Length: 348
Image 1 (cartoon, rainbow, N blue to C red):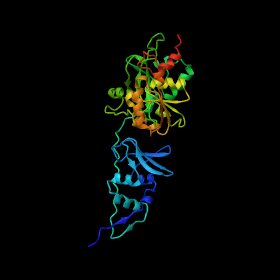
Image 2 (tube, rainbow, N blue to C red; image 1 turned 90 degrees about the vertical axis):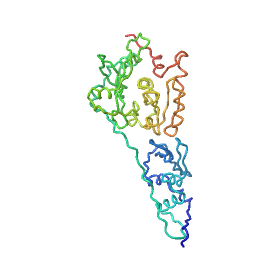
Image 3 (cartoon, rainbow, N blue to C red; image 1 turned 90 degrees about the horizontal axis):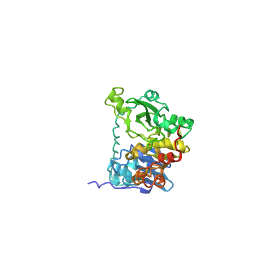
Image 4 (cartoon, rainbow, N blue to C red; image 1 turned 180 degrees about the horizontal axis):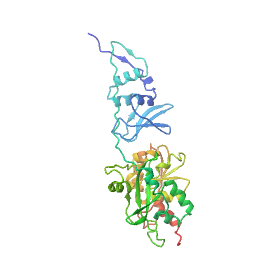
């Protein structure tokens, strides 16, 4: 009767195999994030890369900041395929030509599991020519801005962000905020109207709710009626590849980003669109960047807690600027309110 085969493994040598090479052999897609690499985590259901691979001097391991798990090359291989320690070591030795000592017989090599990629929804992107027909500074927000900044500055910033003008319900001054991703695809177009009366307490503030032209045009038949539009795109995202070394300022509303870009042009201003959109998949294009986060006054605590879970994504610094600058009676106060206080509208 043949004895059960027993193998000896050089675990020190196995765990010295570059962990990025092991991950690639197992079928993972890797993305560079500064000095580390990112991929999907096998310890939990992970649709957006949260596993960090460290491959530096005296460091060859993985760690997930979402679930807190990770480990060595062997740990990653075991978790990925559900293998025992022996099976994982055997496969690694075979793949990377590390000799083993086996006493009896031949043991079949395990086959790693196939990494199934989650199905991505089919999104509708708005044709560039539809946006191009709207781009102008004749909208209500730009009218307000030109009372506080020079027309040349407003035209320059509006041109960078491709602000537009839209006629809705016989009001031809709606401001168009395009959400364009890093690949230049128009995900959707938000429209909003602003009070243009300099003497009004609501000057440069929205006097109506916002609408999305993608949905509106789908209802009108200008786009497919079953169109599905991306909601995970930052306002200003298309500028990130254009200015790869510039420090980024992250705010909530597109209006805040425009005010910030005019008042503090040394930073690249982007916006989530709303408080609840501060999610990893939305912030993914900021990977590896230096990012100053400026929450509205009523969102400082919530944003601080959320950003704390994404420290591996970018170099985030959270500012309580709006809390320090807000009048005591102003529960809601943002960077645009602060800038507007400094630059009172001209009465003509």
